[in-house]
Every structure is written in structure tokens, then in C-alpha cells.
Image 1 (cartoon, one colour):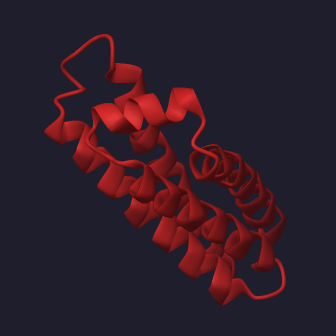
Image 2: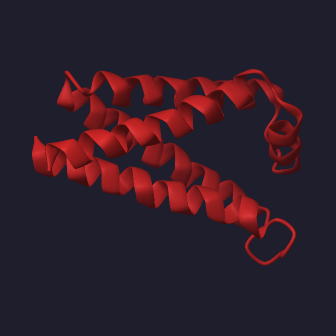
Length: 122
């Protein structure tokens, strides 16, 4: 079971490292969607920095399990906030933006499952 928890943690860390880097660097496809949601460049960079910090926390969790659990919890909360922004923009009802809205829901489920798995193996 610890192998599964560590593997899932590293996969989630990779996803958030890449996603966070896109936001910190203000890449056009990412910033266009966030601007539409009312998120400015300063907040976008802040979100990206939090995602990178969470990814690093998950990676460091190979040696410090409580850090990985905390990082997974923080990323889950960050994603719940993202879902709130999509709800406010009514993205779940618009076919064009639905995929943008579903992604944080799915990632929240995965990071929550990662946290639960890490807790179960600690």
C-alpha cells in the first residue's frame, strides 16, 4: 500500500508542478480562462506558486509523510476554491466551458484520495 500512495503522490505532484509553472509564467491558454473567471495576473501567479509548493510538499512526503498529507489537503482546498469560481461563472451549464469546470472537480477527487491513501499508510 505505501508504494501505491507514493506513486499516486508523485503523479499528482507532477501534474501540479506543471500546472503551477504554467500559471507562474502566465501562459496564454491558462491566463485567458482565469481572466474570464475574474482572476487577475497577481492571483494567477499566487495560485501557481501554491500549486508548486504543494507539488514540492508531496515530493518531500516520500521522507516526511505528514508534509505530504498536509500538501494534499492544501491542494484539495485550493481546488475546492477553483470549483467555486467555476460555479460562480456558471461554467457547468455552458457546454463551451464545461471541461474547464470539470477538471478541478476531478483533480480534487484525486488529491483527496491521495490524502486518504497517505493517511491510511502513515
